Amino acid sequence: MPADLGRAIALVLRGGTLGAVVGLGAGFALALADGGAGPGPTPLLAAIRSGGPDALIAIGLVVLTLTPPAALAAAGIVLYRAGERRRAIVAGLVLVLLAASLVVAALIGEAI
Image (cartoon, rainbow, N blue to C red):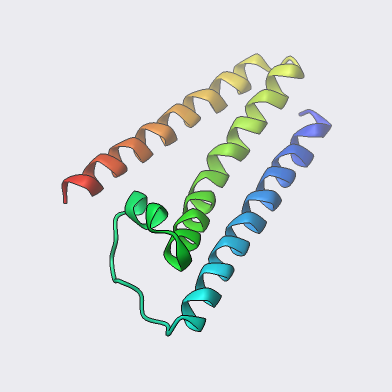
């Protein structure tokens, strides 16, 4: 196992978590300062386009959702560079499955 693997995964997870916490925290703080009540359930892209607290919360949720796949991609790159081709392929296949599940979830969410 490459020594850089743990560092790469930790860096991506730390950065993604920090970005999500900042987005969510700022969005909730602005929402509380604005009266606390938002428009209710809103599609993700509409919330991002709306601006204001809902956009920050939506961006925080997107970052939080994409952090594990980004860590998996980083692991695959480190494994590939270290010559661990089989493990890199497995990481790539799992990443494809995760991406497919996110696409299906987005399509189902729009249909509801």
